[in-house]
Amino acid sequence: MSGVGKDIEKAVGLLMADEVVAIPTETVYGLAGNALSEKAIRKIFEVKNRPLTDPLIVHLPDLDSIPLYVTNLPDLAIQLFKTFSPGPLTILLPKSKLISDLVTNGSPLVAIRIPNHPLTLKLLRELPFPLVAPSANPFGQLSPTKAEHVQQSLGKKILYILDGGPCEVGLESTIIQLVNETDIRVLRQGGISEESLLALVKLAKEEALEKITVPGSMESHYAPSLPLRIGPVENLLAQYRSEEIAWLGFEKLEGDIPQTNQLLLSPKADLNEAARNLFDCLHRLEKLPVKIIGTQFLPNMGIGKAVNERLKRAAVKRA
Ligand code: TXA
Ligand code: MG
Image 1 (cartoon, protein in one colour):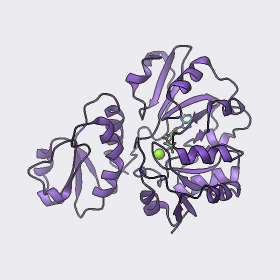
Image 2 (cartoon, protein in one colour):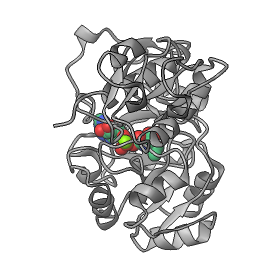
Image 3 (spheres, helix red, strand yellow):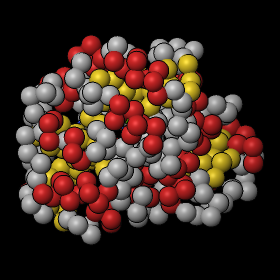
Image 4 (spheres, helix red, strand yellow):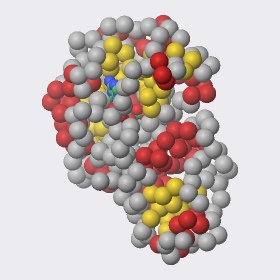
């Protein structure tokens, strides 16, 4: 089992030695390594069992540290970072020579984000390099929003988990690409809703864009170890006995499923609270002695869109 604690100096020591360390962010826990070290980067892919074709996000402590790692920082990016960072926004920018192709899977664009967590911001300020950090879960599985989630899935493979408590946002960052001076494209829905981005930018028309795929965007992802089905509870009850079903509800319990098999995302029907609880609830439900997890989409607005996106991919049947 790995060590768990709040010892920043220990994390600094390990990261300086090209080891990987799990770190807290406001979105999900990340599996961090030196973004400038090929050895550390390879270790991240190995520990997560992640294909090298899935590029990594580079994490920095502040806006001033970005220019070293990009060849162009457009006004729109500056404005967006000033508004939403530190926070759950990731922007693709043209990478400088310091960022290796291993980080971006050969793409000329690097994903940059300033995470909003006091421990990790302190860590980033103490380190002489940025951190690459994918979510700290085995590839394709549920993302971790608590140190114990990381311990359960990767604890045997890593030396230290920096414990920053439960993640406040609970869903990964929103990833965007700048299309021109005013338009952006959202590549992954996340902690910053489209509605809040629209105060500053326009969404580019899909037809006008060349197709870029964000790896992991179509196949099964964020998936619990049990099958997940989306739809009314009646559909499941037609196929399974009630005690074989675990139910993830939004604000109210279902009468026909045993209460011990149910969790609610937000009893007060708050979408932000639902997002914060999503992965923790799925981690808990997948441990129940049932055959299937059922749930329904949330209202498709604000961060609800990002939750629905995760549910859709979690429900894709695995090969
Ligand atoms: O909130 C987050 O973003 C968390 C925390 C730890 O910061 N990180 C995270 O990383 O979600 P990961 O690796 O699980 O998901 C990052 C996504 C991947 O789907 C990856 O393909 C995409 O970002 N991505 C990273 N760099 C990219 C690039 N240069 N071009 C296109 N997509 C990129
Ligand atoms: Mg991930």
